[in-house]
Length: 563
Image (cartoon, rainbow, N blue to C red):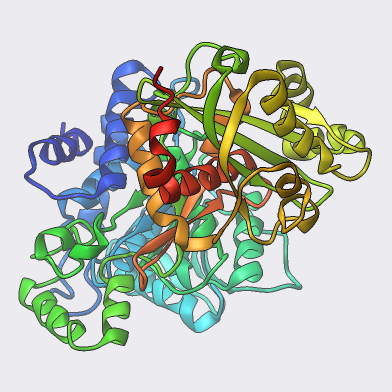
């Protein structure tokens, strides 16, 4: 029996097929998971799904219509992952959310329609409910009509009034219906009035990158929560990249990249992110294969070359091409550092007292007065950078923050990484006193201190506490101006040149960090992976590294602390 997952993975490994970073990570995770028992692979279930689709589903338009579908290897592997990778605890399907991001004209909607028919007729059981969801009904119609057209093209599936057959479908006014199994396919548009009553076996979210903001997020969550009674229900999102910001697409991509980097405890998410890796190679046909796995099949190479030639002459067309054919969204956010990278920088306990009599650089990230504030000093020894971070929370807000964030702040206080400050508001003097203590007790001397220019003037501004004491303050422009420093920091961490000791607070903030890329500017900025996450410790470290780089020509010899 065929194992398309392993076959595709072998072709990825030997370079027969070109895939990007995220697809490679996914198949590594699945294959290694099958090997170590995290998953079990039911080859019979996987092969049945692939065989059924190729036997009963058709092309619905274009020169190949109305021929039967002939799935490409990447599609067979995807279907096999979805239906054949199972939970060893109960043998049921492992993945309940599936995200397919792929370039335009790669057959994503057709594949979604084929999967819908498989669930409708074969996999969903009695009372199967398939939903095609979009912001408007005419958008939901695309998948819905493909499903019905496939049924019409397949005599074994279409109900014949003159000769009725079991497990055949008919088109009613509002849905497609199989009487013998009481199964339906419906199309629905976003609705604020109807927010419950759904019980999906399969929910297909087509072009989810175009779903707008809050409405899209709410509709997705409504459909997902409706699957609670379906232990093998599937949320299947098929899309190219898009232009909507802070959307369900952004949320799914951030969740997916965290999952693939090993930073998330999620187990039921299956993301296929076919994207180019190097934005500077947007017009390189070999790089484009990573976002267009059907290149040479449904996408002629000549067509893509023509589109490249047009995009090279027009900035708007270039932006469109990068978004839709390279699947690199304008201002998209992806998780930043892998667990493996962060782990290289975590080790045994480090005591700042052991670094007394040292020069350093410093950084400050001041929050709103009721939230987390962070300060950092970076000390170099023998070519290794040792950041020491201190954070503060209002003392009356610690338990509230613990419940809200799910973070053990009381333990962080015991370990010395966090201190209570004030009652309901941060007392910025506590941050100032920490720096003064480093100088006066340990002779740890910050040569420059970087800070966000919008920070408290009382602490950091002209004639503020820090400057009045004698600290040299330098305001740091935020946003994508930090991109160069972020890249340097990632490289240093990959090489193990930054060491945080056993600081779990810092580790958590590193894993909460994401990069929001601007395709137009080719630069990224530091953001949080989710609204409730904290990255304050990372922000203070980045400010310190910015001023270290800026003033290194002047203070570099001192910062080496060579004796």
